[in-house]
Each structure stands twice: as C-alpha cells, then as structure tokens.
Length: 200
Image 1 (tube, rainbow, N blue to C red):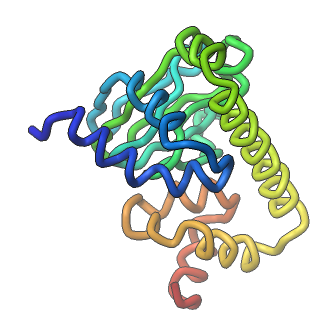
Image 2: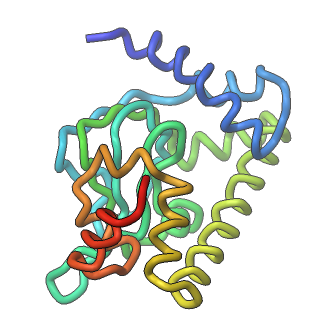
C-alpha cells in the first residue's frame, strides 16, 4: 500500500490549483493545513457520516467518489457528489456542530484526509490567510447551492442534464447512473433517454 504521507504530498500538489481558485496565497498556508490532515479510508458502500450524527471532521478527497444524501419514504435522495479534488462534508452540521440531516457514503473505495472542527479552528487562530481561504470556500459552496436550487426549479430536465455534463462529466464513468438521476431529479427512464441522445 502506498505511504499515506507520500500520497498526501502528491495530493497537495494537485490541490493547490483548486485551492487557489478560492484564495491565492502562500504555499505555506496550504502546507499548514495539509500537514494536519489525518488519513482515513473507507470501503465501497461504507458510511462516512451517519444521518443524525454531528459531523466532527471535514474531509479532503484523495481517491474515490462519495455521495451525500437523505432518506425519505424509504428512498435515498442524492444531494451532492464529492471526488478529487474536492471536499466531502455536510456544511451546516460541521459549521454549527449540529446533528446532520444527511448521510455521506463511499460509492467507491475512498481515501481521504480529515481535520477536526476543533483543530481547524485552532489553525484559523494561527493563520488569518487560512481562515480567509475557508471563508471564501464556504461562500462559493453556498453560491453553488443557490445556483443548483435555481436549476432544479427553472430549468427543464434537458437543461439540468446538459449543465451537469458540463460540470461533472467524469462521474458518468465512475458511478451508477441511478445516483446521477436522483441528484438531477430525473426519472430513470427519462435519464436513460437523455444519456443515449446527448453526446457527453
């Protein structure tokens, strides 16, 4: 098995362009954060965050794909995907330290680095630039959520499908399509028709 710290160092190199999109600062700020990430791994199908639990950790995805979802009437409703380079977590539960209304599950075998809520806030006290980075990431997350909400209410299923392919085309090869259909609020039959008719 590869050495986790070697993987973390390589992943930091991959993550820097991603992080700079939110806040372009000194490499030492990113290195401060990644030096604190603790290794965790999950098998396919394993729960990372349970519904009703308080999310104590924030995850940086090194390998694999995860879904966040909630259960209603015996069905899973997908609300987001995470895959490298990105963060996995339930923002409101982590930020407010309240029980989560959602769960996160590994769709594929996953390796992640995590930092606790307490430790992250200690790092914020050490680095104003790191705190600014996370503030901008949280702002971008909520802007994205607002845009997704608008898409679900204002766009046709064709438009929702096309916009998803523009943002996340690799997922079509990585996860069962039923999860993408759930995320897009598209009936599986209509989803199959769109997938076969629209070039990805």
